[in-house]
Image (cartoon, rainbow, N blue to C red; front, side):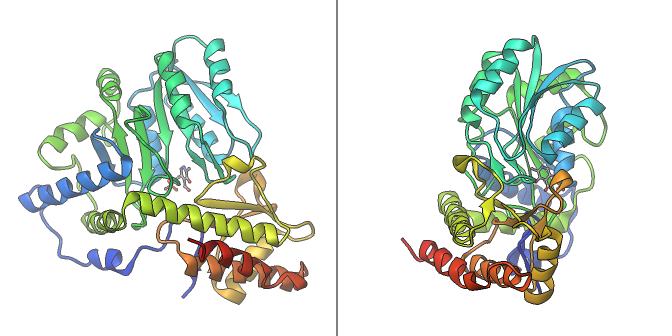
Length: 380
Ligand SMILES: Cc1ncc(COP(=O)(O)O)c(C=O)c1O
């Protein structure tokens, strides 16, 4: 069996996978209501919110579309900082809803900053929303200034919509404290459940806007809220996935969110230390904005990242990802999320340095990355 170290899906614990074999229940019955209540409580803990959280049977992109289509009307202006592949997807969804995208163009590998957001609001009037990708999975960049960006947007009366698909549950994100109107995530990344579910927390203000827009059928917020009152979802949910989610959320409670975030931080630090010891360069060029959940690395000159990924998979059974979009061939990405621990970090670093040596890069460096990663992992 391979070790899956891509930036999602991650490998759920066995107890999470086994939960899916429980017998099905009536999704309009009392047992389901209890299951949903338990899940709401668990999700609220992970999101750090008192807002209701909509559960969608869809992948993360469905959650992004839900968060946009419920509030964005034809000709609404929406600010989108674009700094990678998923930011572009957010912009595309706005345009599909008839909205007008005002981009903050940011070089890939860098992050949006509060002053850029101030400038964007100074140049636009009547902005309906700002859309932020908290952790740009294609470039391995984490937006650190979300609280400040949210404050600026609210000062201009705009909604704050955040895609935290590759960060929530592995990185600090305080939905209520930072006044995020809609926060989106998926089941398959830091929450470490199987893929197939998306979650969207919705603020009071977001709900009011959505009631006015009242768009769609399957992704209509009003329907989800009405059914939520009864402890149901409006359409038949994936009950096995909800069992798995419930178990994954129990595991998060058992570990504690703070400890979970600290574990992600430590594993990421070990990866970066190993990468530097191997004389490799992380793709994000601003140290403080390096992601704690997706480690994006430039492939050394003369080595194609697709070749490196293939060698790691075939020779070491460790599966990492190449680059997306315009970064295909020039970077590789390691998922550092979910149940990641010292075992996964060391196995991946070992596969990386051995594969690089096989491809002709730094035979003398084999073992150096492991030693450096170990120093971080075994420090208190
Ligand atoms: C930041 C981000 N947004 C959106 C998505 C899309 O999620 P999905 O593939 O579950 O639709 C991903 C998936 O990798 C992601 O990392």
